[in-house]
Amino acid sequence: MAEIKTIAEIIRDVSSYYAKKGRPEAEHEMVYESSSETLEPVYFFILDLMNDFGLNPEKLIDNFSSSPGSGHFAELGQRATIMQQQGTKILGDINTVLRSILNIIHDLKDFRTRLQGYDDLNSKDKNTSEGAKLSLKQIWLDKVDITKGQSSIKAMALGQAGFQTLLDAFLIAKDEKEADKLDLNDRIKRIVKSRINEFNIWLEQSEKELRKRYELERNYLKSQVNSLKLYSRWAKPYLRAAQQLEMKESGRNPDLVKVFNTILLELTLLGKTKIKVEDAALAGDLPKDFQKMKLKRDYYSCVLIDFKFRGIPQKVAQQAHYAFGGRAEITFRAYALNDDEIKMINQELDESDLGDALRLIEGTAGESLEQMQEEINFFLEDKEKEKSREFSSGENPFSALFGKYNTPAEKKAESKSDAKKEEKITSIKSDNWIEKTHLRNLAAQKSIDTAFNLFDIYKKAHGMVSYT
Image (cartoon, rainbow, N blue to C red; front, side, top):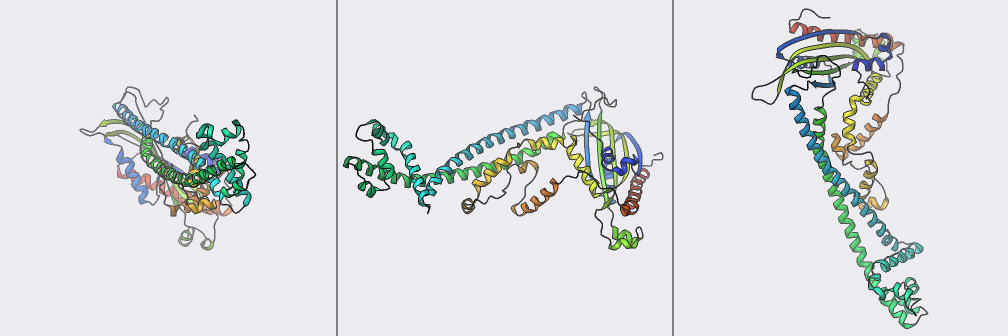
């Protein structure tokens, strides 16, 4: 498995601007250590502060590692096992329903093939109609008449003398009147007329029965698909929780000793503010000509905050959770990024090991679902749509597994957004003169100021003196 990159390394690799510089616009570090106070206030103070600055932070990394000898490791391991067992049980139910759906689809295909003969029987095309009748007669001979044993048409025509023309006569005659016109002896005519009468009765009743069974199977398919959606919705929280309770490999990190009572936490927040060109021009930060200028891409002042916690888990008395006191290393980094760079950063995160867990959860649905989904949609369509063969997109029964519960009115918008998501950025255009000399510089300056203000406010609020 490839080594997981930090967000700062991804930004450096994605943006040629920072690759050349090697460092962000500004960087500040602080260390806060207290074995008696919990670490949560450190995180939430900065998180709330970022929201107050209008940065709209999002969490990019959330990892933890516990020493194997600690009680925290044992308790989280038990919780993860419970989540895994529950998720595995529901996935087993999903597989059972999935097999049932596959069998139903197979039966529906068989029903549809047989019903096609009845539909062609009523075709305006004479050749199609006659061919369908011959085909149905063959089915009747093989499935119904054959049960008469030696009295069946095929047994008499192929095994008894004097009945050699019986099979051809039955296939040629459309009804009793045509059987009378055949140049055959009366004994053959009587048998042909009686069997044609039996065939016509079977033809009417079998079509009704087959269409009824087809509708019942369709309704059953709909019921099973709804069950699949429900099981998928139930499985998602357990799978997600099991993934979130997985610990990161500590490797040779000296902070984590096997028998010590220690936990390591890694958190990364990214906040960004869009540079509003018109407002900046009115404020004098940009030339006035920028008020009416249309730019190809937006620029953002971004602040990346990395937290590295080394704590001592202490179980709260008479409660089921832990408190963490210890050492927090916090790094504030300032960046100026444009739309394309942010999109590529998100793309790199999704394609890196950071996105492996989500792909594993999505992989439980299987890679062949799209093919099966087309068949499910086909059989669950309205009758009018079936006749015209107009296939709709439908709703994926596994969408609940990924947290999607879209209504039909939202499907068109979703399909458009999915099309946009599929467009991957392979390269980023270099800044033009305006972007390089004005927009990038303005975004950089604002990110420098914001990062320092966040750092300075937290430092003063906690009475810190030394910092970098």
